[in-house]
Length: 363
Image 1 (tube, helix red, strand yellow):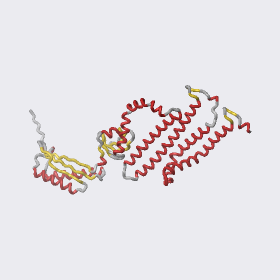
Image 2 (cartoon, one colour; image 1 turned 120 degrees about the vertical axis):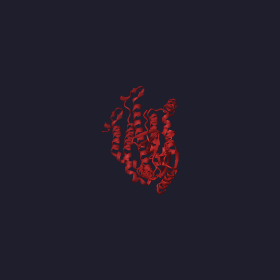
Image 3 (cartoon, one colour; image 1 turned 90 degrees about the vertical axis):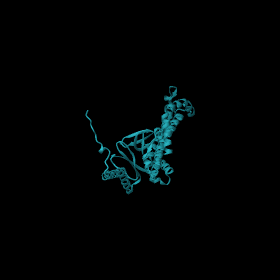
Image 4 (cartoon, one colour; image 1 turned 90 degrees about the horizontal axis):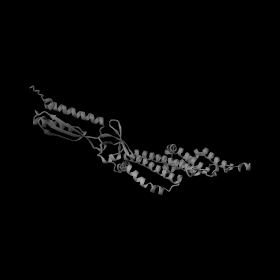
């Protein structure tokens, strides 16, 4: 039996193979228990006293990445105990097979580790989003989504740098220096993308609008659904979805309709020239009396704006409280219009169009 364990196959004894594969098999059998233990420790560190509240959500996110990372780590560590067999001692483009295998192992480890980090970022962001929904400040929600995407991008870049350093044995400093000229060219080529990224920070810190606000920009009116690293997604009043680069959202005039304090209504009455000054004055007073009786109207103005060859023009402006829904506002506006039409009929004043005679001369 001792001879069997010391028997050498591909530069390694049978005992070494048994130890390596036994360790891997043991981990595969116990991976769920170990993963839950590690996940529990991470959850306690991230959520503190509310560990039980977020346990299931956290486990659903990180259990699988932790298992993959553990299996990759133990397999790579166990196989490292084996001596490299002579049969695989060859070079490919002056690169040894051993270095290729080690590089692939490092890439797998880094990918699984970064994937685990991304899942943890998602979990932390979900907790912060739940807390943000409890507050009245809507900008907290969009800030969390923005920095979640931003941190994910940062960790992906870190993963790429780790692969360059440990899988390809390249000095990151030298690589970055060597890429400086290329980076300058890429920066010029990606000038608009960088400008949009900077504009996204301006939006979040200056807060001209937030997710859920109704805005008017570039002749489009709609609700802001998401503010990303590069662009802002808006659901228009036509139920379509448009994507506007953040730079344009910052550079152009953006009307945030949600921040208005009143809704303004403008009317222009074109009255017949046959109307006397007394009739016009009486109509103006009657319209003001209607506005004074409506609690929803905050401010108003009624005046004879102009008179000319075809009509007397009376301008009517009034502001309605913002706490009305759109349907309520339209109904209220209809009510005001009908009241004004009744007043015009009672005053005996005709509209300009109704008093115009068309004369056709035949030569």
